[in-house]
Image 1 (cartoon, rainbow, N blue to C red):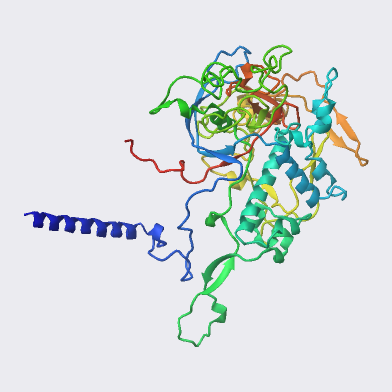
Image 2 (cartoon, rainbow, N blue to C red):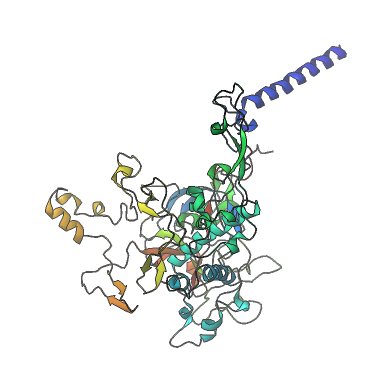
Length: 570
């Protein structure tokens, strides 16, 4: 009986093992076999190629993974300022990556050094590429303050190299993010042997530099079209029918070849960008430590647990958890153990991180986020990955059917503060706005420019239904009516480079809100504790810089929402 039972167990085990082999064979994608056609997808027979061994997105330099989820975006405390601009709303954000700490002076100096080497300011054509990226060090000056030491030293002195960079506008922060994307992907390709060693220094000059979009869309124009920069490509197999003897009866065999990396290889990382307001607030609140099953237990006033700004553990009891202005004329506290250690800014990672492992989500400096400011978060329009600021564009295609790469001539913008900045760097792919054909009969969006969608565009106003859309009165009213009619100051420069200021002298302006003001979040070294609440939100023009606003970068997560597979609870 025992022998028969043992034999039965062996048979069952064999069936299970064979069944697992059958199931593996059925899930053909994991073995390089198409579930749709049955053909191999490794490309060795010259057929379709797909990366079936992809293991997930790599974490980019400086980033921390934040698993997404639902949370209450907005205030959880009394609105003592009566701003009424952070009404609670339930939102969900997808998983993403965000910088462990704010961008520091030394990180920004690396960017400036690259710009100076690649686009020498001695060249009049490139002069404003470098100078347009320089932080405004004069933000430290005060009519009744002795702060010249910061004006002269804060950006470049090694004593401040791990301090957060300030004096950077929203526009400059976004341009840094774009640059960082290209440098990280360039390093990835060079480390994998696709480029010559040190290509990032030998071939970066003027229009001859690496741009991620150019490499993906027009690889022949990488490094300005200098083919010597490319060492080798991704190996694959192809059929070369040109070399086939038409009278031969032998089957055509595939030949080895190489190609540039593309999106389907999963080698390159998505773009660095500023975090959206929803992403930043979600990361700062870190409600993951308050999670109980599928509920959040309690509210969080700060990025850390508790209702106070001081630590409560026995070893460090009484130490401040962030640097902020503690009272009138009190930026740090009385010198000694209770002092927060920072009259102004302080080196990043000085204070403990929050539950996501992120530093300085309160205090040190406030931070730019990607969103255009509006007093209301329109949760009825979108409650998933909320973001206000979309202006959809597409790659510009030339008459030859290929994407247009900007090789010569730099187009600049003159900002409202008179600073001149490049729109895009040479070597980038030219982009243009979507046209009517691109948005025709789309159920998800109707126009390319959505910055003022449902709050600032003409259909949002109370005048919209007063006239028919084909009447002359409609067009005139459309020009004059705006929910956010901030001053329209125009800045330009003459042929000698002198600033020409045309200020808006209209007495009918009622708001400072426009499509060019951006949200900044988090309290800074000069803010009271009230502003340390991640839900608080303020705004400034996107081309303005201060001594208390910095930034950190973020990156979307592609693929799975979690780094690890979920398993049943024990």
